[in-house]
Image (cartoon, rainbow over all chains, first blue to last red; front, side, top):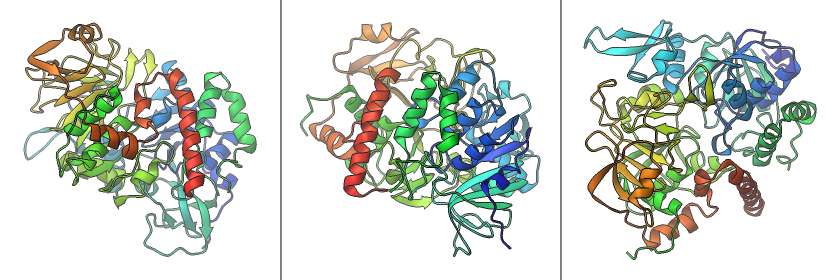
Length: 269
Length: 282
């Protein structure tokens, strides 16, 4: 069996209105090439779910493709605030479902376990429950203690960028695992983009191919985020992005990366 | 060991952080916290050689140390990894039982050490939406080793009433519990504790008056009767910070305003690129 697809074929699994889960973490191993292809397609009204959101998510929010956000952190780490998220979220132009590490991790685990919720000590006493009235509490039948009952999460399409993958979708993920393995296990469709796609990888690997729908070869597919150890963060590009947004030139920046963004000069040998 | 006379506020904050680390501990490091990373590494290089780092970047545990980086930060964490973890494992299985020591940076903090990293202003009509609270709301309810640090001490950060409580402090009537609350808060002006249930000045940094700290704090500041000047770094601690741990000065970014930061970051990115070519990094 061969699951290799083109980027455009893979993007066609993402329908307007669906929940899209993005793998990697903040500025590390993000599926940026996929996101650029998605931005070229006419897909909108997305619910974006990721442990942390960075550059790639900021492009989607800036381009108004995201209706609802589910993440515990949206920013550019040491590079500062994510400019378009900060702008749109402050203006109330994107719906935020307030999440934390625990609500996302336990929510995915609940789905994996086939139960409606997972109990946790998280959130108790904070203001989080006030802005998430859908999250209820549960009483421990043994001790009587109250726990937060994080509801199971649903993901339609998960996209994960890997260092290497093979025709069956088996993939090698080096570090920054984030929630990649959980996203791949719960999503209806799983797309793996990879720096290199080979016929057959040798284990041990981090991602088994059986839940994978399609595999796309996307060299430099995480740029300008990093893909350790193939390439590091492109700090210049992130600063160019922040500068463009600060100057009110997000649209021009987006046009530039959609036109020639797959040919990063600074990561070429 | 001789005390340093030539040191910066950043050096002193890193030293204060380092001195809260005990040998053998597990230390959690969050996102974009170079002052904390430098402080942890300083402890590792001095009195705490057997600490284990649990890093959000990389999702790894490691025991070796490497210098701070900006664009090659993964060299520090992934390159030295002892074990790769997945984040669900970290959050669901490890944090509740390991309870690593962690330093959080509040956007707002109140007299009880409760803090906010979600939103400034009304939640539904914000003045400024912040990145979010990561795992702060998950662990501050039970962790016995929460510390806070504030690179820019101002009335915008130290507020009487928070706009949103995403991090818990010492137990209060409204938010009771068994947790001890933050052990200390280290700012650019001084070190504070929560003995008695409210933030209290424990020591003031060199050249900082109590009056100035009061002016920069948006609530009534309690005073430890034994409040004293913060002990300075040793000459060796300053040398380690500048020569071994953070030669590029990445720790200085946290106290810079946005306008100062961007040109400085351009310069740091350029310096790292030059070193990368010279030393053959990826």
